[in-house]
Length: 248
Image 1 (tube, rainbow, N blue to C red):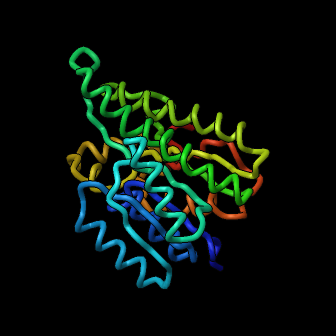
Image 2: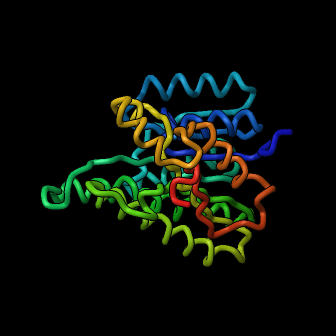
């Protein structure tokens, strides 16, 4: 059963990791997929080909969503090319970790710009076509770090906590327009980023997780498919933890 047949989705930061997994899962469920990438040009082009091979319309856009004018232009391009925008997945994000005593203003500002301002800019632009069609699902990729904090990640934790407050506010504002907004908070997920951790450190992390293993990007993607689909049509303003019970 294809849960997203006929829908159009835009996913930011989809050239690798969780964003890539979401794009592929959405295509498998019949969604036409627009996605963004910034530095990973070859990976973006490769993903576009993979998505098209799944029988859906797909296109990658090289865009920096943290720049307000680029975000608005991106939404206009997607709507003009695909004819609609039913699902927005705000996934793009970075880390610039440092203890607060050593954290620079630039490190703080850059993480806030990419992780939080991009969500504001894209969501603000995306809700215009969604309001016209009286339907839409917005999914923001936050983190368990945004719920509990993490030493050495004050900037990242603050940006991800900000996404949660933003998500709940959007849900309250736009529920009457049949637009839903939810957040997914992944825990310790195996991606290129976490794959760089030493094996011993990874094992220590996994011991602290009730399910005793790392998560897969595809497991986060499955949650995104559910929230994007009509199966979740009475769910809004929620934060779903995909963390193996880490914060239980």
